[in-house]
Length: 84
Image (cartoon, rainbow, N blue to C red; front, side):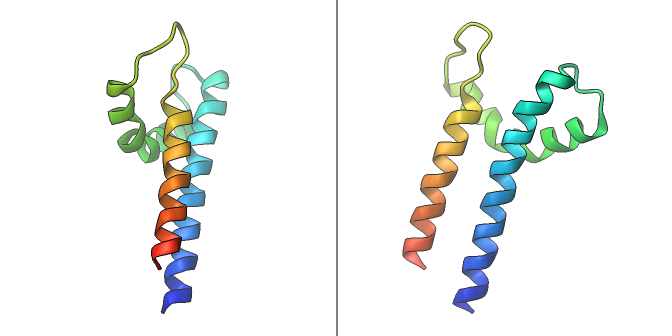
């Protein structure tokens, strides 16, 4: 059971990290968000990035919430794996 849980947590956090990275990269190609893949990535990542965006100040055109979200996800991932 523990092995399954560790694998599930690994996959979940990797999917979230890649979704955030994908959203950042695709925002250069589709800044208006018209493509379906952009909409899917937004639906996956907005519950994580939205609250962070409201807390963090925006520095010019730069949105730091994806960087902070990825760092927090990696810390939470490590913490969960140590607890299990």
